[in-house]
Amino acid sequence: MQKSFSLIQTVAISGVFSAVSCWYGFMFGRESARKELGGLIEELRRGGGSDSASPPHS
Image (cartoon, rainbow, N blue to C red):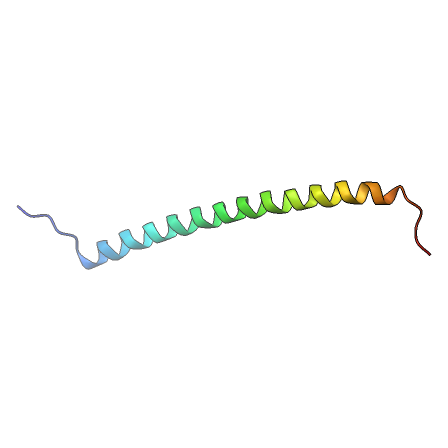
């Protein structure tokens, strides 16, 4: 006997697959952006820390 999926089952499976891959893509992108921004913030803090000790320009 041959087992085949109906159209509704195929659409449901593809919808679940799409939702899962979209979720993983979103989470991966968010984590990547967080790391990139975290590095940029640390760089600005290090650069900004030495500038804050100098007198302000007026």
